[in-house]
Length: 131
Length: 343
Image (cartoon, rainbow over all chains, first blue to last red):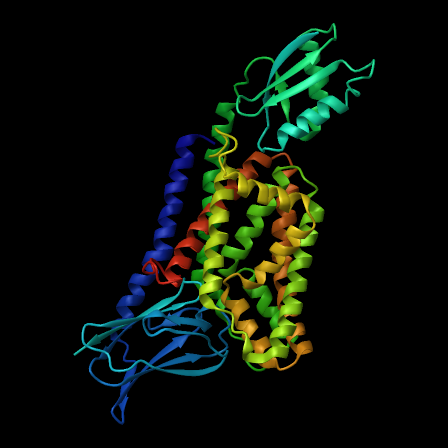
């Protein structure tokens, strides 16, 4: 195989990488902006995130200055997203395979954000707080 | 007594020096032997030359044939003139690059496709944990556990050591550690939580080892043969020669960061007895076994085949890709860098 052919194939494959890593996340981000995954009950804001083969929605927006709890739902989750780490509040736990984990994250301020990541680091989610 | 200098190719490891010297000395009879014509052998790995002292009347051209016959089976070759193999080597890397990257693209596409995310509901029994093991062995866990197995296997096979025994010990160590530690988790209950930071750091170490071995397989370090720190080399020598080390590395895979393994550890924790914990973890490890056995013995059979140089370079590229992925993910998991990607 000649060098040129090899370089062309390699570049084409790198574009494949681009599509795998970036293409998916861009379209997901757009769709997840619209998802309403928080509700306020009895003065407490609950944000729901599904954990299975990654976290969805990956980016969510929630209200600031209100006591907030995070609900992580697992449903037959055995992959990395079951081992959840939230560094900013010092949370790390391997979630049960099916169930809900309720995590108290206090009262966030506007402009803050909260990032959760799975133990191996390849899945993550982000919550932004707006006033 | 005359001294001849030959150029040697195929010396890829530090132990090659000893091996060539041994073969050339012993296969031509002991130095004291009347029949022996090779009186001393000196291998200079850096300059890729072999110096031979001989009292044979044969010409250098005849000697090169006789000596090549002896070391041919070990894939070394002697020439009188400096060989022009360099160009050929370059060709191989250009073939290996697309092959390696194609594997990486397929692998990450498989992760992204979500095919592997189907759920298994209900109670976790040894049967379901076996199935989960099967899934885990082609999941993103393969990036770290499989990458490590592939790079170590290729490296060991490349060094022409009795690889079958080493692989068997590694897989035995893995199965035993999963069974025993699973049992302990079941018996002790929640007392020992396996620390995320600890597994993440172990994952970083594994990914660095993968990167080094990957570069070594591609041949980045070939120019100056012994570029790896000697302590790392000693470590690999131990892996190759001792019984204990492959067992211990197999044992260590229990702690490598892998979401599936961690989930199963929690299942074993809550199972409540030594036996049930053992069965769940053992079944999980058995599920991951086919893929890992395929990787290690597949590497060995390629390594002894006709396309060995292509295999080593392709494997090197795959291992480097997986190593970079594992390294970035590990750093993100520790909160050192922001997650760069999400598959």
